Amino acid sequence: MTASLGVNRLGRWRLSILLGILACLIRELALPYIVAMAAFALYERRYRELVGWTAGAVLFCAAYAWHLSIASTLSRPGDHHSAGWLYFGGWPFVLETAKRNVALIHAPNVVIAAVVCLGIIGLAGYRDRLMSRAALILGGYIVSFLFIGRPDIPYWGLLYAPLLPIGVALSPLAVRDLIARSWAPRPAPRALIALERIWRETAARVSAALRNWAAPALRRLRVFGNLGRVRAGRDLE
Image 1 (tube, rainbow, N blue to C red):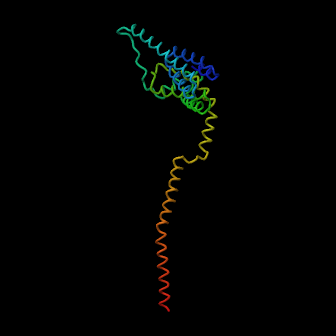
Image 2 (spheres, rainbow, N blue to C red):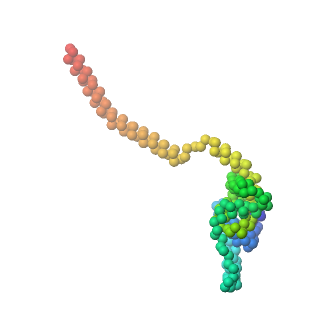
Image 3 (tube, helix red, strand yellow):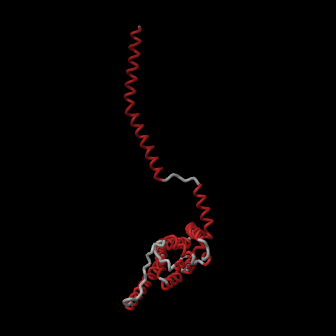
């Protein structure tokens, strides 16, 4: 699967699709990778590549359905059946799957947790079409393994563990950008700017209406005041 990502970066998407299908034939858990690649091809309007990934997914699903039909005929009463994948192993199971990376086999859980987090941050923060795909795949498998996977199958981490060193290598740049943006002055949200403009316009209109309404009354008061002063002057005379 990692090889498929690499050749896709070189523009050889046909070979990338072939490697993705081979990954699915080895383990059906690679199917979400094909779906993610098809989604990116659709987003980037690479329609020929989209057709290829879609055809690959359909081809694998057909082969897997054929495999299940044959396997169902071989099942006999009393045979051992899988206990299921839904186990809710949570973060401990994710750490166990991350140990499928050779560099993390004997590492303490604190180091593994830091590597996983930095790996996601590094891939997600690097603006590159390949790294965006890798970040989605890495994050998708990690989130899935919070709920899916029994304690006896941590080797599922081989699906994403090879991507962790790449993310860790890129993480200093992503962390730097996060720190710089957190300290940079943030512009006001557009909604607040719009509300402020509406408030100012409303206040100006209300003020103009009050002035128009009060102007005649003020003129009458001035006239009455002038008449009062005139009468007071006559009385003094």
